[in-house]
Amino acid sequence: MTGNRSHAALPGRRRWITIAAIAAILAIGAAVGGVGAALLLQNQRQPQPKVLTEATLEALPGWSGSTGQAIVEKAASGQRAVIVIVSESRPVAGYEEVWLISSDLKRLISIGVLSGQQGRFDIPADVNLKEYPIVDVSDEKLDGDPAHSGDSIVRGTLS
Figure 1 (cartoon, one colour):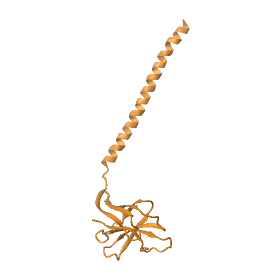
Figure 2 (cartoon, one colour; figure 1 turned 135 degrees about the vertical axis):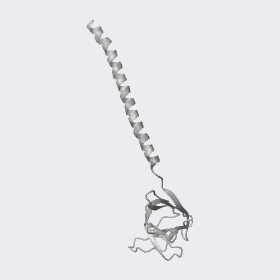
Figure 3 (cartoon, rainbow, N blue to C red; figure 1 turned 60 degrees about the horizontal axis):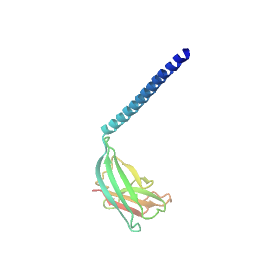
Figure 4 (tube, rainbow, N blue to C red; figure 1 turned 180 degrees about the vertical axis):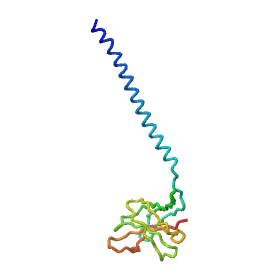
């Protein structure tokens, strides 16, 4: 009879182990789901950057077929940034530099080096985009000269 009792008790134990395992899986699933929901709500509460202005970047001589876009955003903190997206029609000789240029093309500010086809560049707080409305991406040689090469790939005026 003792043998029968152990066989009778074993299925009961298995049932409880199965129930405990299912409960643990459900608890883990609920915890993961709760964390996911909390992250989603947090992302929805954070203010998204506001698009201030944008420009279509058009190819300059020697770069026919190249295209681009520039989008200026303002974060809730007040920080402005320009997102630049460029598709070149041919490989660059050196590296691509992103500039803000005055309407008269006489003053320019380098805001960074483009790595790949897209980049985000902070705009210094004291830069007035009405004074520097042109976004330019140039092909710069690795010659140590910080000045604009004069070889612009694409350029456009912020609206």
